[in-house]
Image 1 (cartoon, rainbow, N blue to C red):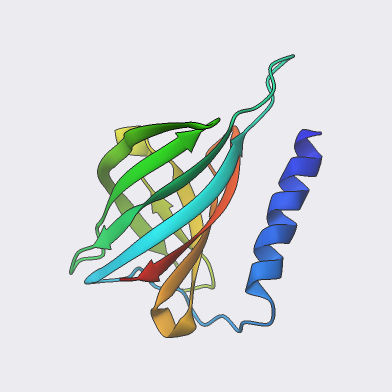
Image 2 (cartoon, rainbow, N blue to C red; image 1 turned 30 degrees about the horizontal axis):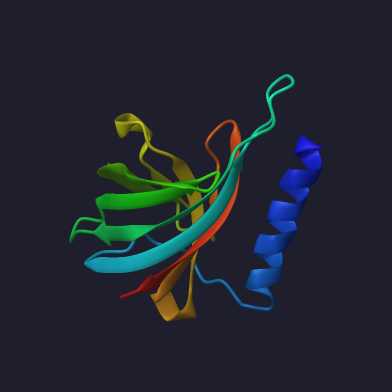
Length: 138
């Protein structure tokens, strides 16, 4: 069942992407975007995974350093802020970049830049979680 959920998440991301052509993804600078995301925690043993949705703001400074403020709805219960912290953005100028908030206890995302650099589409690659999201320039 966990594999099926992962496949559904990836198919959902790909269906959002459609025929968008991706250029080299770079870490944004002087960039602020509002995001929405939906995710699920993996099933462990006999415990069903938790589902959650998130909204928040990502901000990138002039050096590409990132900060985030995130609110969650976790299994129908709102909580927040769930995460407020800073992270690092890295890219090898391929089509996929990495946004890492793990040093502060947050998630790790792989992302692509679309819409002429005005939005980021991302997937959560933190172990035990699956999820997709979209962040548009404010």
